[in-house]
Image (cartoon, rainbow, N blue to C red; front, side):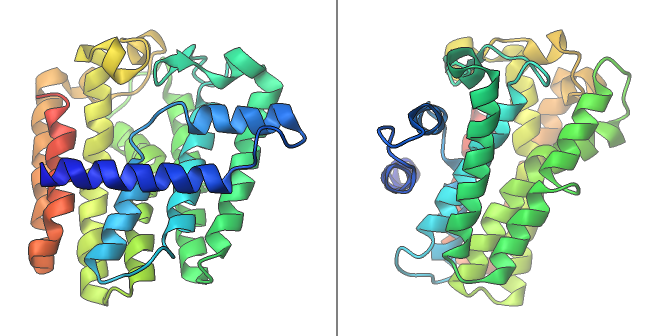
Length: 287
């Protein structure tokens, strides 16, 4: 219950901050601002901002200085989903149980809304007045991070891929930003080197496990829960863990990675409870 209450509280705080930072839909260009808000407020777990807030607080950070950065992470994640759903990428009709942005506003506005969220995110990151934070996020989403992973994902469609290849895709496309979310919170909170290293290790294992669980849910999840069509990965010939090593082995690997993630947090002591709860929550989704 304590974990659930924490997540609910932080999600509400993030949503309030996002509402504050996003341009109002009545401002010109109205279609663009409405589109940005449509995607950001279409739902979502707010996992990345919550990870940033949790690591910030775990290392002793106080106050609301983490909120602009936390919201920037959510905007970046949302922009990546908008572009991911486009006809030139995955061509998805549903996201979080609602029509994808390009289905509502058209391809052009969808592209530009994603671009606008990306730009606004960096405006917010700069509010931290910490160049290391900006660099962490930029590298996590660049050619050696999220975007690089997305390219490899596209190139792998319809091809037989190795375990090493699918690990690369997942680690970069999803894992890098999750890891960065934890790191920037810890950096802003004043973490020492040992603590930052421990949280980074957690982030690496957690990030990969999270995407493996997402792969599994595409096979066994309920559409009303996962918010998109079941089996879309297979339909799009995506490189996934169930496709490469099978469903049961994927479940075992996800559990192993999450256990390893939690083991990285021993130096945090009692302050690790949120991260342990998050790891358990991710695995329970396929439980």
